[in-house]
Length: 334
Image (tube, rainbow, N blue to C red; front, side):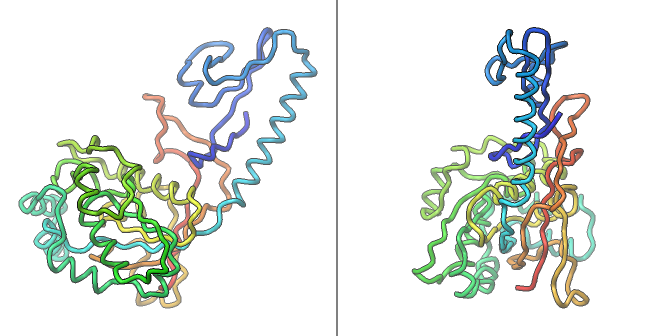
């Protein structure tokens, strides 16, 4: 067994070599699940088979070459991804926020918090006037805006509008792209404010954004509330997607729930603090206020020899139970 580096998924997966009397087959762990066969493992569409007549010495030579390649890839995956500068902003106050947020600040239960949001619920809730003012007040300096290579937002309108307000007034010399990413949407389901508009509606409302990476309609929303763990996993996958991109200086606008769950419940996201004045600062994984701006350095953890742990009952990969490649978010001074 050794490891294969998957550039698109940005993870390391176990690779198995099975030597049989008549054939030798290389398969990944996922392919092993799909086939679920005893004896020799063979995936007709993906496996690479050696000739029946191949000699034992030839097979050993090939295995040796493959092991060298695996070791090389393991080394490359530690050095190719440079640390990224990531500004994270929570959206401004939206229609469903005022009463629920006030009650939460006063110490209400999570049940009461959701009850108030449901009472004030609205499909893909827009910013309030206060929320728009918050966005303008959090506008990035021209120096920071000019340094950005990429602006990323949740597909929910309150995040998209906040992103526009935060970079509003940026110099025409700024060349950042605006891209929407589904992984950074708020905890999904149950509430209408978590349901997004179609891409056609979003393009009409936010014409300078790229929605090509999300489905035409909202296929993931349901009447059942997404689990906190699943929401945290989505956030982790979104960070992996950012690490796979070439841009180094990024602004991300997302949601309080998603950011909180991702930073505190996802075991493959490690939080660190390198700010100079930590005694008076909140913790680096504290819940974001509306339109609060924080700066982090995003990088892979140095020690990332990874092996996925599969769910014994379903056979599916569970990020919360795995030692999948670990990301580090280090908060630094703005």
